[in-house]
Length: 376
Image: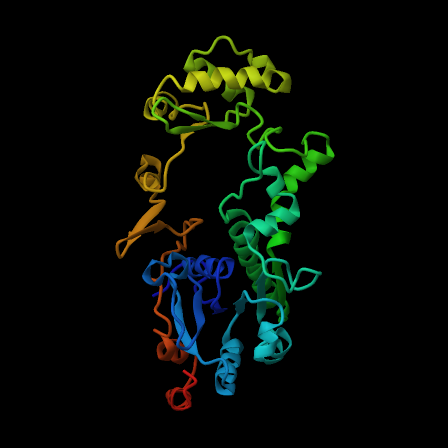
């Protein structure tokens, strides 16, 4: 039995990579019935370890067969939303483009996830998270003085892609329920990454953001928003931006030769950084944790992936859970009345073909016919 605020919402997801399946996971975690269309005979790269595939039912089709395309269209008729993450034109060539699908189900919200978007000179080109960040100015702002550094694939793929697609799909579903009209959501990772930089664009316009790395408040330029190595080689994140929190840091660490009144004076930053760096090298990370973690100094240990699930705060909130021997993040965000849940493990390709199709209104005779044709 599914649970969560999206219980009753039906989503059809065409199997892909990166942000599209992550969006499907987010919706499934909150209770949506997400059926994933896989290619018959395909193989999963990670199998049971593919955390972002959790909570779905997998239906395997041979999309080269007209009968499979017709079955997909019948599923579209029963869906509230659709997710696809192919290059522009792929779904159209399959006969599953928005014009055809919305003709069958005018209330459907058709979500298209790409890096460059459905239009523009780069729309048909390949790319990855770092390329999309590069084009928006975001990558230029992240890294050391010497070079830009990709922030994993969190900022464009998942932040600017999957989260914006989920946001757009749910807004579209609300609109469709009010108006009776579905629509196409063109979700480009470049657009999302640019949107995530909104604050920095405002600061730049106000003359409060320099267009270079490690020269600003939030990019490691300020000594009170940076990481520092400890005596044991481990690291601390130090981020007391507000004066009252900076004062707590100085008080708790016993620093008396840093003028708090010059906290935001860039000319004082080199001396502040040198003093703080020397200070944090005098104790181990856990010694600093014991002194500072339970204060408003805004200091937290830089934990490895192996360490993070065991931190007392994460344990108390059950931020990480273990399912079938695999440690993974729990569903987020949290709802007081309709909590989400991991709805099931990652499926094997085609594992739920008959079950899911029957659940979405297909007749057993239809499934037998599709099986006889080799479509499923």
